[in-house]
Image 1 (tube, rainbow, N blue to C red):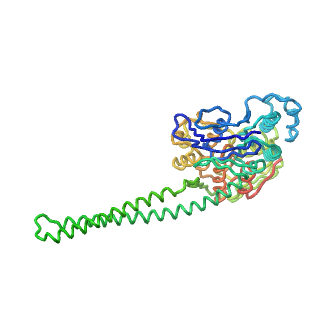
Image 2: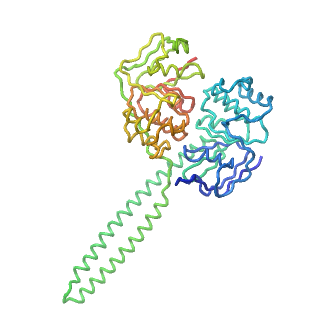
Image 3: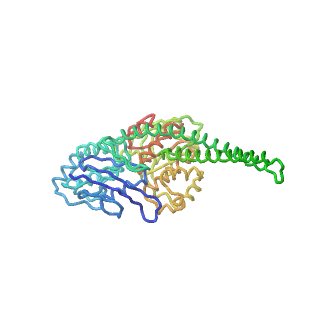
Length: 483
C-alpha cells in the first residue's frame, strides 16, 4: 500500500474566517490502523473529504489509494462469498445481506456496510463513527473485527473502541496536527501531562507579566514626576539660570531612562505573550440538581413494562437512591429505552405492572434518542423549558456552536447538533432525577470527558443508558442488567 504524503496543506471553507488546516505536513502509511481524533468542528470529516479529492485546497495531497467511506448511501459491488466471510468474522448472520435494508436494525446495517467495505481488495476504508447504532456486545465484536484488519482511518468518540482497534493516532488540535505511534488513550494521557505542565508555565508567565506591567506603571509615574519637576524648575523669567539648566538636564536624563525602561518592559511583555500556550482547556461545565424529600424516589420490584399491551420487558428490579448514578445495561431490544420512557410518564402507550413506587412531585429531566421533539428557535426552546440563557449558550458554545447558531430554527441543525441542544437543556434543568438514553451519541471525546467529570463530581441522581464503556466505568455507582 502506498504512503499518503500531505505537504503544505491549507484549507478553510469559503465564507468562513476559520482556517481548519494551515501549512500541514504529514505522511501516513496506509497499512496503519489509524485513529483520527479531535474536537467537533476541527475538521475530521473535512479531512476525509480532502483525501477523497472533493475539496479545493492549497498544498498537495499525493499517494491516496482508491477510497470508500463508511457510512455509504449504496453498498458497493462485492462477491457474495467475501461479504459472507466478513459478516461471519463479526459474528453477524450472513443472511442479512439478502434482507431489505429497512428491515435491518441499526447494528445490522452497520455490520453489513463494514462487511462490504472490507470485501474488496485495494480499497482504502475511511470509517466515520461506526459505533452509533451498536450496543456493548456489538461494539466489542466490531472492535475485534477491525483489530484483525490493516489499512484504514477510523473516526470514533468511543475511547475503548478506538484503543481496541487502532495502532496509530492522528489528532487535529488548535495548533495543527499531531501524529503518534500509539493509541488515543496513550496520546491523551501524555497530552494531559503536557497540558498540566503548560498550564503551570502559563500561570508563571502571567505572574511575570503582571510584575512587568506594575514596573511599567511605576516608570510612568516616575517619568511624569520628572517632567513636572522640569516644568516647575524652569519658570519663565527666573533669575537662577544655572540651577534651571541643571534641573532641566537632570529631568531629561530621567525621562530618557524612563523611556528606555518602558521600551525594554514592552519587549519583555511581547516575549512573555508569545510564550503563552493556546491550551485546549476551557471553563468547565456545571450542573445543579435538586433534592427530593424521598431518599429512594424510584423503586421497582418484579415489574413488567408493556407498550400498547404487548410485553417489552419483565422481571425488572430497580432501586434508585438520591445521589446514585445507575447504568441500565443489556443488549439492544431488551427494553432499556422503553423503561426510561415509562419513568418519564410522557408516553401513554407505555404501561407497567408490578410493585412500583415513583415519588410524588418528582422533577425529571429527560434526554432521549429522538430529536424530533425539538421545534422552533433554539433560544425560544430554552425559554419554554425555563433554562438560564447564559448557562445554556455557554454549554452549546463549548459543544462547538457559534453565537449565530443559537438563533437558528432547530430544523436547520444536524442530528448531532440537535442532540447537543437536548443535552444542554438537561444540564440547565434543576431536576430530582436525570434520565438519559444514549446521551453521548455524536459527542466528541473532549466533551465526553468533560461530561464524565461533571457527572462524577456532582451529587445529582441519574439513571442512564450508554454504550461507551469508559464513561460507564468512570461514572456509574451501580450497573443494572436487563434482558
